[in-house]
Image: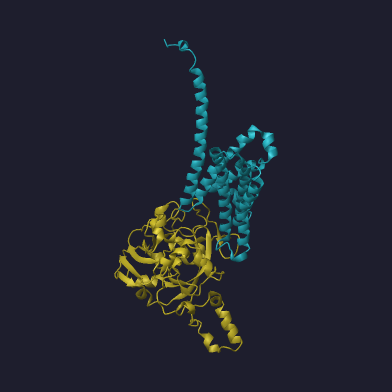
Length: 317
Length: 220
């Protein structure tokens, strides 16, 4: 198993997520029992140092819906560079080397260059955001991501006025990724957003989940999360950020243009040509949990609808 | 061979039931087994694939029987076919119950609007009379019409593979394998029918060959 980027935390120090989820209850109980002074718990922004991924800020708009288990989130993945079955990435991503890692920044930017992961992360405060994650395959999970606003990162590269779009490239190394041999998608995996979408407060530069660094199969060490779009829009294991003037190529759109559009906003009113998008299976509820109605923009309409005012969403899918 | 048949039938019966038993064990999470992160999809897929695999096996019986002379294999085909239908019917029930919650409007819309579901549902509908008439009684009553009815299995198999192909996201390597296998199984039958035809016309020709040549009439 390759080492995640070294942030000075041993695996043995990582809090089991069952404990992690109940931390506030446990702290409150400890206070109630007189085991901890009140002053210790007053600092809501910090979490006890043993095991946590730095000092995570809590994001006020996290969903209160029940998260999927860490097991589910990390063993049910679409990461075709490691195989096309859902269990393949967890089984095969051991060969990915997330450290050392660097990201190339190119295109319409005042400060392009190659940056190490440490340079990328240093100035930013990590926060935990619990987002709904909706796959285009009509299943969804609630996931507690760890990251920071992508806009804060992109601003550092000073995109010019010509930068109307941002394109993300995933690593495509034959040596580390056995699935690259098969041209099931056009490698390297490419995704893209309009500059407004990339700069939106919800768009997350993601480095962890469940308070731990991203496992390889989840797109270590850096991935993008755009919660109002189908999950495939969030590129994993990002190695290059490219600012450009025209709409960039995106891998799924190139593979099946009628099925996967550039925007791919979650939209129950626009079916996939082969299946409906009106419902979704919310994973984590068990065999008989049925399906729930899919919400437009995955329920983030209040925050993002203004990006698409005047845009015909059935044409611009 | 006939004496060993009950043993073979029992073994095949158990082998056909095993996937279902395993599914139940996984659903109840016995012995550390589980259905994984997406249990509904796992059950749906397992029922569908087991049904499809058994269907393909039923189509293997005749080619194997013809080339090895093991005619008693036919005795197993009904069991494989009925189990195949059972798994595919369960596949459908799982869809209706767990995916659309018995919402009949949605079901009708799915069958009408989603081509892969249209094809899959049609395959199941066509398979139903075959399952119903699989008994000895029906075989006797229908006689030659039974054989004609059961030739529907070829259309059913084609529809089933198309259904599988059309619901895959992008990696068609598995359905492709089944398509190739099906092409071989059907191709073998076509080849057989053509050789039977050839033998039949050849035997007619050989009778004509001994007719006196002076009977040939020259065109004007």
